[in-house]
Length: 129
Image (cartoon, rainbow, N blue to C red; front, side, top):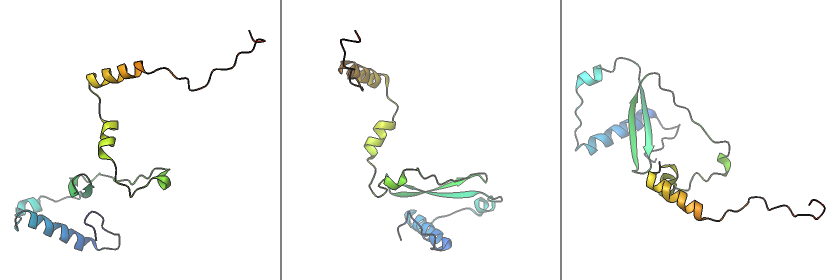
């Protein structure tokens, strides 16, 4: 079973035990948690597991009790190849905030491009003139 994807049929306690054992091994074979920290968990909270594909790590987060998690699937998800790895550099370049110099260079490049009409010009008739 891959670490980042627990099937619904796999028992949660076994999966959490596996994660805890991996954390103990990563910490050098011993992980000390003060009892006061455990006792301080005195109200319902949410523990969220996420997967960071860029670093191939599981991320555990403590969230408040009012946290909601929604699974949102795009309407066109049928035609998206979910198995293809994302080109992270391309995604970052599309979603990054451009600096003033980058914006100026982009504007200059676009101004040098010849203007192309998206619709061809209408033919002129001698009758219309």
